[in-house]
Image (cartoon, rainbow, N blue to C red; front, top):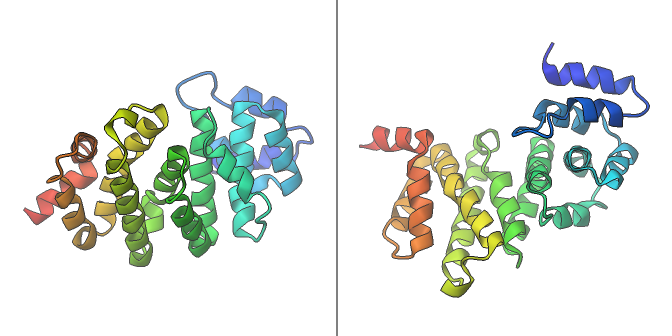
Length: 233
């Protein structure tokens, strides 16, 4: 039995999840228990998800946020504003939970999830744009070329927007966080559809902008991109 399924079996028999989450979260530590997060996302009904969010405990909030992604895919749009708010949360794990929530939504309702990511890609908050990048730059979501194409458009627009930010604002922490996401996201999209995405990425390498050059350099370190370049050499 998979670890996720083991956690689901335990959670299904518990009335109060908090002691189990606290004992198995993996925090404090460098890596939270993502298998437990996934289990919570599958087992939590909306009431349970709201309870987890209300605790304001970092790990419990992540579990609740990802659960909202599943419910979003199944027709509950009442918590979309909450996901948008959490996308700019000061806690990086919570922000990552929002990306995971959109990815979970995309597993069942990819059209909806990509529509949300496209809207967020135009948001004024760099952290919300970062959530859009992190959400769509997931290999399993890009096996369908239609969605790989949409991810390419999202990254292209967000990268171009970053290049338009005045130099004196580039040190803003939220913009740095967005830049970090772009620093791996391009490699995912290029690997998903090299024919369409590689020429776009290579044109970025010709840009004089220092942050664009950093994004290109970081993506070139990724093995998935190196495999594409080796195959086209």
